[in-house]
Amino acid sequence: MKTFFVITVTCPDRPGIVERVTEVVVAHGGNWEASRMAHLGGEFAGIVLVSVAADKADALAQSLRELAEPPMTVAVKVTQPPSTSVAGLRHYRFQLTGADHEGIVHTVAAYLASQGVNVEDMETDVVSAPVTASPLFRMVAQLHVPQRLTDECLRANLADIADREGVDIEIIASD
Image (cartoon, rainbow, N blue to C red):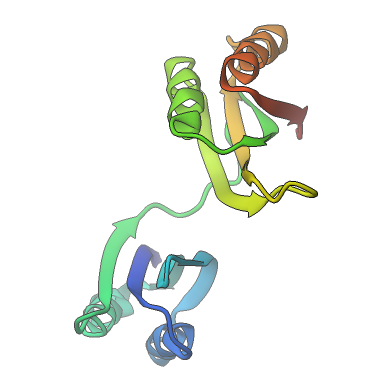
């Protein structure tokens, strides 16, 4: 039997953070299942899914928590094993680009939540637009959409949001 943990780590960015966390995981016989890590505003932020034999779980969790010495924070949470099937949901790749302004993510997130759409994965950033170098906002996400929300309705409502926000939205079925 395995125990699964979601581990979050934040601290000022510097070399060796990932190495230190992996050292603890390996020392306890854990397996690094999946992760997302980023440099955000001078800070390292990472989230990791780790599995370990149930009889080693408490020791691993304790050792991971011991990594948390200011300014590093470490949170360890028991979670469920990853599921590869999401019954009754359709999968889409969502991409948004447009001039950066406040409220874009909230507007999209509020609509998706109101329709029961789950944001499985999301990345956002601001880059310089070609030629003008003005701030260009980009958002890419993987969505799980309930069957009751038709493809036509989803596309029409996202097109309305794109018009109101002055952005381009592309959505591609990825089943």
